[in-house]
Length: 169
Image 1 (tube, rainbow, N blue to C red):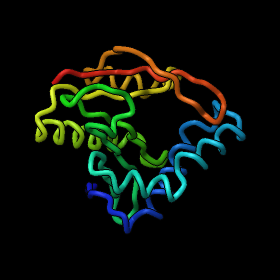
Image 2 (cartoon, one colour):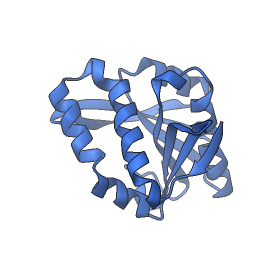
Image 3 (cartoon, one colour):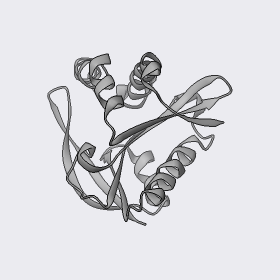
Image 4 (tube, rainbow, N blue to C red):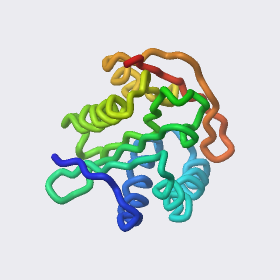
């Protein structure tokens, strides 16, 4: 397993894995219409290019041999999806392809986020996780995150709730 920072030249790979892993994770609990609307909005090439170009955001691919198996997106400063202050780092996305689940890739990606937070002198790390994603919630709790709030998340026009989970470093 190797981790590499994603570059703008890898935009097609980023779009493909974003759509694949999001669909795998949420297709069973959401209507095809809401899922399609979200994928179209969040993972179009223009949106992802803007996110890749933002100096306050970083993407990392994790590879299993030569295949992209998952990815991480982190945000600091103004790129954070909630105002959490300059002492915070947001883990906006950790997604791993289903066929690579239970191989420690989520732990590896989260460890990278902790490493970057430490390098940047951040005091806390936070994320939003869908209230119905029990596996992810259990994973983050095991890693020391606690629920500190909630915010709305829209899957198409379906309003859902993401729990905000935070870990003080």
